[in-house]
Length: 412
Ligand SMILES: Cc1ncc(COP(=O)(O)O)c(C=O)c1O
Image: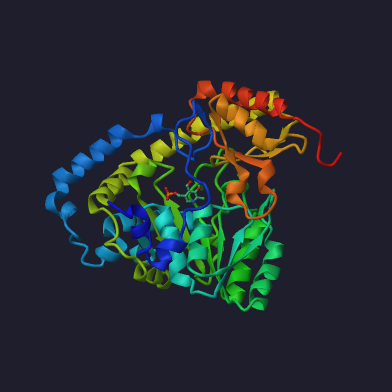
């Protein structure tokens, strides 16, 4: 057809034109040893347990599982299946020490969907939002697409530098933007692996409550704590109902399910469901996942994953020390998926990346996660989806690539 793609693209809406994908973020999927993706280990997906839960759902719930909504009523078309929401609410209430019922939980198609909905529920064009200087780029993009002015605060070894938050909020006001939202990944942060300290958690919620700003707490790695119990959530400290919490089955069960939830004060969740443009989530899948949780299979599976992933974390630390130090420095993560490597200044990282890629080893450039200049000498490495036997050889290859790319330090 003449004209083809160009002519069609000329008919796109402003939104379709302006909302490009985050810069160059297509995940690598053809590397021999792939440290690029934040994928849970696919060899451990609980396929038998899922099959059992799905079979039981169809056998026991029949047509109820296949309607727009079931006995829970038409609000399931906004909030999702009421049974899974109750199960999740009970667990969150126990975990966070805060009362919660199904009115404070909505099911979403992956937490990326939930994060976009939460952004759209609270942000108008011209509003302000704060994000960590290195963050999950999709949420950063949704905030930009909603028309917000964005301020960043740094992340150090204890997570977001909360002392810098008041100034960031003031800067937004000075720029004419009303601060509405603070987005943070407090537990096993992506990409840096850090954990927000408890005093900072309290202070963050205090500042948000005092200043009337909502907090979007992205919790998708929270239960992968390898060296002790996970930290208390932000919602645990939230007396004012300002925390909207996002969690997901993606990392605990499988991302292809696209099932996650947003939880918080029922008034906040009402806002979230008002901006959605679907009929919530698959009732069949929600019912099956409720069975997976209620049967105990889910908790058993997460406990097993934690052990496997801790071991991979340990193998990765040892291999980085042996093959890559001192050309990289890193803080061993206490949970989650990610090592955040600082590459020594004398390494030409672009050259090292290309050499490693040619040898079949992929990692994710830090620049994907930051707007500032700290990104280019950082790398996010996830060993979680890499078979155990490949971790050490892959990191040895990375070490060879780093050593081959050593040049004069820019400072010398
Ligand atoms: C911080 C963070 N939030 C959200 C997500 C998205 O997860 P989901 O599959 O639930 O959309 C990811 C996935 O990598 C993530 O790293």
